Length: 458
Image (cartoon, rainbow, N blue to C red; front, top):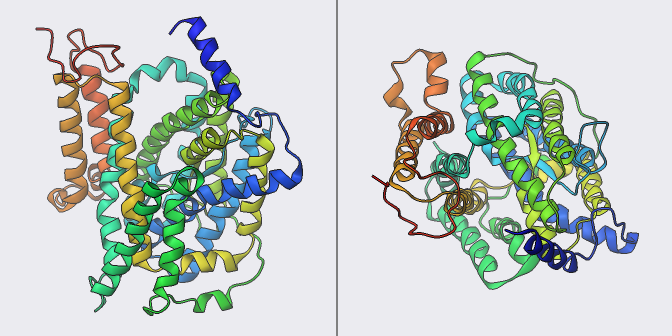
């Protein structure tokens, strides 16, 4: 694109911005705008820790505490991104929270080694993302949209069984797979789909949250909502660092380290999308500061019994829609997250979410992850025979080892953790094939013209 076109696009974008990054709306306007950011990302902030906690078999009290810490750390990390501490932070309107990219790896590690190994790996591997912030220009070519899109698709594909399991209820109980459970999950799914298709703007972005609220209400007459733990939960409590201890497993560190590499690509995209909403490209110090904040705050999250934090893509879409890119508005959302994270009763209410409600929401959330990965590939890579081969082989290997891990049961236990991770096996396959297969004049970069299904030159 020429400089003239870029300038014209910048002017158009600026015309759509109501509040720029450094603008500070009056408090009466900033407060509801901050709450809007909170609502847009609240469900993802709590749902993913819930999925992880349930999958590795945590009890109610531990699950409540994990959710509480997820809210607290997300709030602190958001403020660090917004206001910056030294080189840590992008000074951009970025909301932070647990990324879906970490869900499957953390479940694998937690199931095999327990919570202490999760937090140990989260802390030890976090500097990887800090390092990427400083060397990204040198390694960017290793992660074209073809590779990152495949990995994002694998995130959603490997989570499908979890969503379906939760939709059916609790495994091992008499009601697992009952029409009551499946009906409630179907209701949540249908409402999310309906709101997403019939409404525009904020309602569309909050479709899954609306569906979950309706699912909560519908669970009451069905006898599926147990709020007994809410009464015993405290109104206020301080975090307890390293409450579950630390352990360091090499295979666990490798899995989480790879997830940090992939999520750093997601963060770079979110930073670009945020600055694009105000008509400019991100500055080097903004990208570096954002990645450093991701890594540092993920290590802090591990210390305070929370899962890794990264930028939320939902927030980028909300900024583009509303034209509100003010850092101070997003800072208000961060303060609300901190307050909620200090109130265990809020976490207890969230943790009481019936499995079918979480399952119905998960079908939508995880399905959207697959479609996002597909869009990344479609927009960033030509579908040549070479690239289609990389997609096919990577997805088959990634999904295969994740869904039929018993096929690798004869491997040593340490190797099993790596070999049965669909994200690791599929992602590494995509990386290696993209690096070694000849391009024959085709590349993983977008083409301006030409048949979308192209044949090799020779």
